[in-house]
Length: 130
Image (tube, rainbow, N blue to C red):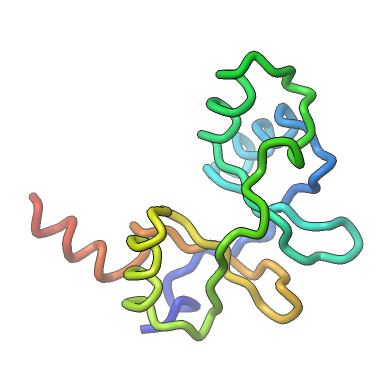
């Protein structure tokens, strides 16, 4: 099975210059826990932020909600591609200790996002734990 078969189409991104508050609001509206960070006008992925990043890196450190995303994003995040095998991506995510990967298309443009829970291998393991 390929990543394109299980990924969530991701069209919501943020700019490195956007604020923590605007990112949190966008996450709320889009009902997502992570946002790829793209360079405006270029579209290349330069980072990723999660809801946890906002809580720990901004609120936990007492920074302003107007802090720019560039100040706390994960720079040059790991990505996968639509044609990658889901078993390979699941193993890589476990090895990296991450729960989500941005799915990149041509020129590192966002085409989706895949989470560990989206992957068939992880769903089988979860079902076995019940």
